[in-house]
Amino acid sequence: MNALTGVLALQGDFAEHVDLLRSCGYRVIEVRTAAELESCDALIIPGGESTTILKMIDRYELRDPICKKIESGLPVLGTCAGAIVIASKTSDGQPPLKMLDISLHRNAYGTQVDSFEAEVTVDGIEGGPVLGAFIRAPIIDSVGSGVTIMAEHEGDPVVVSQGSILATTFHPEITKDIRLHRYFVERVVGDAP
Image 1 (tube, rainbow, N blue to C red):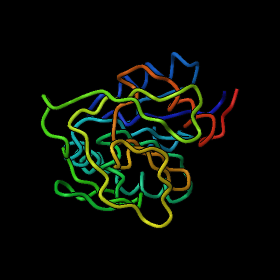
Image 2 (image 1 turned 45 degrees about the vertical axis):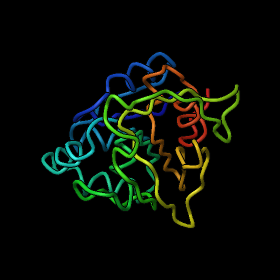
Image 3 (image 1 turned 90 degrees about the horizontal axis):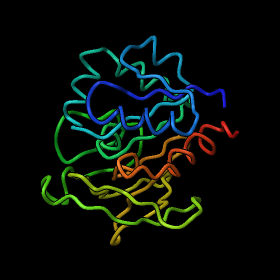
């Protein structure tokens, strides 16, 4: 387990991702600068507030470095707002990074009080459904031809992949279900123990 996974630590629940990765024995670093990003073998963009995350990415001049690293094959996991950040199109807010060929509608399930947890069966993940927290979660309106839908909830895609990019519309880190993170590090990044 030598890969170094970075967690974008500008806003949102990055600490939960860091703690979960460390509990699995993975090497992890909080990413706030281009130099820290450069040292990473993979990147997680956490949930939070997508407009704020994108503003912070621009403030810290990380848009071009992140996009270039993804274009060169950097594995990325975007959860909830992180999925919005890497999407090709969103319903509103700051312009996304346009790295994943999906269109999303922000806060599609409603406000904070409409948040819920749901079990989601994800292709490629063993051990039964994954428990995800849908907190002001987006809904994926459309996916491009190169995008694989790995899981749905009530007919809507909630886990998708495209090349070395994996995205969820929910928070797997909040429910402490480590299997999506393990799948990302071991299958997508290729850092199996």
